[in-house]
Length: 206
Image 1 (cartoon, rainbow, N blue to C red):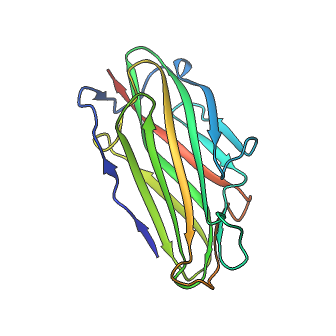
Image 2 (image 1 turned 90 degrees about the vertical axis):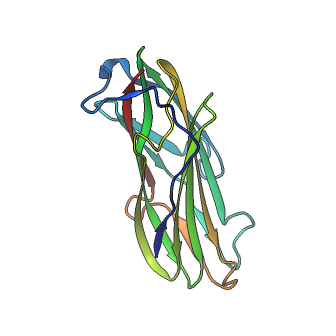
């Protein structure tokens, strides 16, 4: 069973003008740096690719895995990764996260629950948005694909021009409290053993 929770909107600027067709010159938009940390993304386990038109990028994780059940180490049931992505913007432009696609694999005994929650925010901006997905066992080996989707009125905006650091805090959790002898795993993609997150942007003039 897949349940997508509602996005919690804390606030958004009304001054920006959405751009329906196109955005800034791609040559003026680029990632200055990407940093990450957490139990699910130790250093050296994340790779990234910025797409050709500079409207999004892909991050691939090697070790984003959570397990629950008898014999599992303490804290193995919960993993997190916080990303800080510094995007250079030309003057007069700002952006918001439009969609985020997550792919991976889950295996759950009856009444074991797997969940994923991501919070999106910009450095120096108080507002944030969050989305949560949940699966309840039994799941006999399930390749999942989930999209967090934000409209131009249900998101947060970067500061205007210059550099904008977007933070993405993702947590995965496997809960066997309703079946203490049950096993559960939320792990990486079953084909290439990696979880992929694909990000795309909305652009605004400011």
